[in-house]
Each structure stands twice: as C-alpha cells, then as structure tokens.
Amino acid sequence: MSNRNLSFPLLEKAVHRLVELSSATSTNAEIKKFLDYGDVVAVLTDHQTDGRGRLGRQWVTNPGESIALSLAFPWSGEDQERSGSWVPLLVGATLVRVLQRHGLGEASVKWPNDVLVGGKKLAGILCEWIPEGWMVVGVGLNVDFPADKPPSPRATALAHHVSVADGLVDSLLAELVAALGLGLDNLRTESPEAIAAAVSAVMSTLGRAVEVQEPSGESWRGKARGLDASGHLLVTPEGSSELRAVVASDIEHLYQ
Image (cartoon, rainbow, N blue to C red; front, side, top):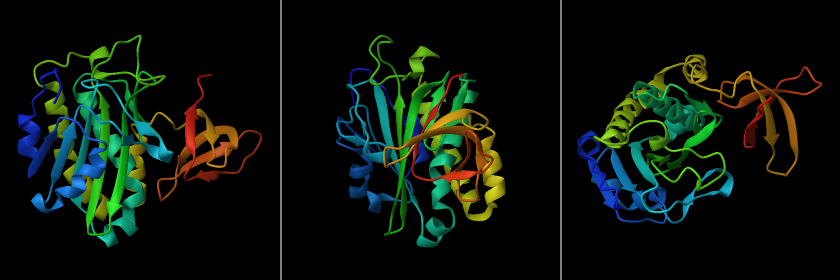
C-alpha cells in the first residue's frame, strides 16, 4: 500500500481472505488467483496500473489517490441467468447507502455502474461472472487527489467531502461487504420489481434528461423514465412517446 498508511482491520474481518497488493494491473484480474481461499475473497490496492472500466475504458490513478477493491462471491450459473444484470446496480445502490450513512448525503447511482457525489464521479463498478461459480465485484473508489488535478473530468474524492481519517475507508469497505452479502442473497429471491424499486430510490439518472451514446458512435437525447425487469434503462427519445430500452450504451446526465 502507499504512503497514506491506510489499514483495513475491519475489512479483513469481513472476508475470508484479504490480499493487499502494493500495486496491481487490475484487481479483477488478480483475484482469480485466490478463489480457493474461501467463500468471500478480497483483493485490494491503492495503485492500479491497468484497471478496466465499462466499454473498455481504463481506471488508472496515481498511488494513494484511490482504492481498487475486488470481491469474489459464490455465484452459480443459475444465479447469473436469473439476476446477473442487476448486480452492478445493486452494488452501486449498496455503496450509496453506506456512503450516505457516513455523511455523503448527495451520493447517488448513475446508470449503470457509477456512484456520484454532487454530480461528480466518486466510484466506478465493474462486475464479471466467472463460470467456475464466482461473481467478481470490482469497485474503484477515489480517496484523495488535488482538486485541481483530477484523474478524469468530473471526478471527486472522499476527502473533498468528509475526513478520511480514523479508519473511514476501512469502515466503508467492511460495511459494503456485509451489505453486499445480504443484497446478493436478496437478488436470488426478490422480484425484479422489488429490486428495481430499491435501486431506483438512490438513482439520480431517473427523471433526468440524458444523452445516450451508442457503441456504434451514434448519440441521441431523451428522458430517463425507469428500469425494466432486466435493469436496462428505459428512455423516451426527444420528440417521441416510445420507451426504448438502453442495454449496452453509455449515458451522460444533461444538466439543464
């Protein structure tokens, strides 16, 4: 770990095995080496050199600026078929509620896998299912960086909003693990409507004008109306009354 001297005794108690790395290309990649260590495994670093984001993007920051955490939970093929598409949204909603309990009342989910505070990105989420029976949950959480030198436009960090002293980061991550254990169990039993309601309650995308950026490069604007049974975003295009399901596209909130 870096010169921030962060320690994670609470997180270590919350998982079966915690692996702390001084640096890693990607914690989602590294965790695959440790899946035999227990039911809930965590790999963590504050220097990720080639982290992956959604749609092929990178998550790379300077040492000490952020925490990259990957968690592996048992997750069968049946679980994946039934509710896998909800996992990133559930993780985001769970993290938002943990942040809100620690004073970040403005925290919200931006569909499909970002956590915002004050309209700026605090955390990103990347989940992947491993057919051998695991769900890997990757979370990149900005801890601190100079306000005039953000790692990306519209980025923010914990230290810009609350004090990160006295084990705050450790507490956040330990609470996230505990809450995710319950939340993933609920995904196996709750209806899509119940899951959508829980996620929608902390999502700032809904009801907002958005720009949809398709993988093809095409973009269009509309209003985000809700989530369908698979967690896809339902958007009404400008000048239309139809509802279009946005599946693999990117979303920008329009501040107007």
